Image (cartoon, rainbow, N blue to C red; front, side, top):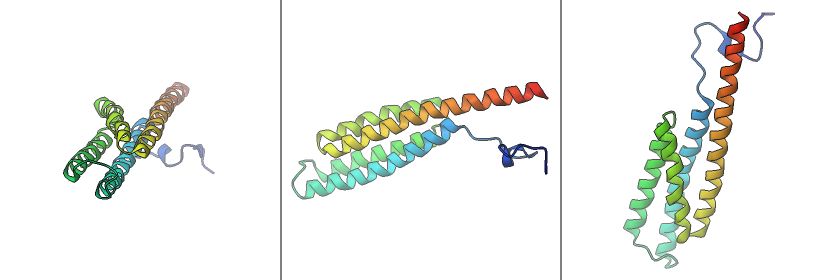
Length: 141
């Protein structure tokens, strides 16, 4: 047996990559999933407009939907930067506002807002606890 704790696993070996921020991982994942959900919401809205349920021009639906999906993808790519996380927060507003035309889109937006808020909160807590543990382990050495 080795004297390295099993909890650290591969992270404890010399020369391994530094562990990624939990905050960045949680927010990137959520925002990327929102980008996909926005694409599917665009398809739904377009289908409803073709059926006459929603009175919006198809070009407007596709332009707005794809721009919002692309911005969610950009925010996901830059979620490790503070401005990327703020962009992620701001992009929830137009997604939820889409509920004006299709109420189920607002529901999806509110659910994703809750998931994003939990990801930010728990990710920051995990990163803080990791830093405290690393400081305590450095003090023991």
